Length: 367
Image (cartoon, rainbow, N blue to C red; front, top):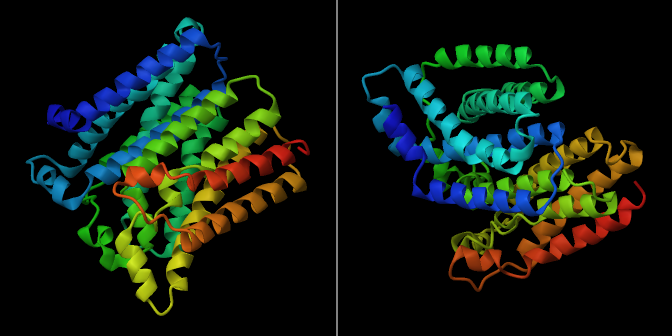
């Protein structure tokens, strides 16, 4: 059973991606001096593990694909333990080996930190699974679901704020007990994935979470941001680059353009503002969460200071990115394309990135 699950998760595409990542990590560690910063290491492990785990769940727990595993003569919670164990070993191969290659010369001196990262990655995989399970429960009242989601987010960040291996093991034990108690089936229904859920759910959100390119771009972006934070570079260089990387994630900025059927439907609707507001809300959530999280990390690392001006700056940046991206999709949608790669290569996506870079560069002198 564990061999079958592991084989499904670790396919040829993942192996190729891991090999390329290891070669790139070896090249950077050999040619550049990378400073070992424990806070940034934990931050990168949290972000990358969470995003990759969620992408795995969304691609694996489709009802038509997972239903065969549920018919096996083993308990449901037993299957979840086996599956998440496989996810952990895939994560170990993909991510933690890369950290070992980058910091191979500092591995012995920082061995306890690597052990902490190892345990913490397993903890994040478990909590992200609970988060995924919570997202599929439509019966919960909104405020209850939101409060549980916030609780899971806080639970994932506690080991970063409190560096204690004993506390981490206790949290991991609690998460394992919770996992064993899960008796119900966890899967993405076909209704949630279909276009008929346009009224009930945010269609653009459903399309985005099914797009592997968005998660891949996000993971690479977070890794590059973590790499920038490890360098002793001037704030006027780091801050503009980090916020520009967040703004340049192509799939989320071209969701309307990448769906020809959606463009035709919007034109035929008597009230297209409702569709655009759905898209605007998604952009607002994305830019708020990403920029807000990066803002907290920059404050935590003492790169910028927290005051009314910096909070106002982040708020203005979030609103501008959300509104401007929506206007670009409404007024200047990308129509001439054959493959989605053509959309992502279109020069239009660099307009927002150029403005964000210039905007943050000028304001970085006032931090």
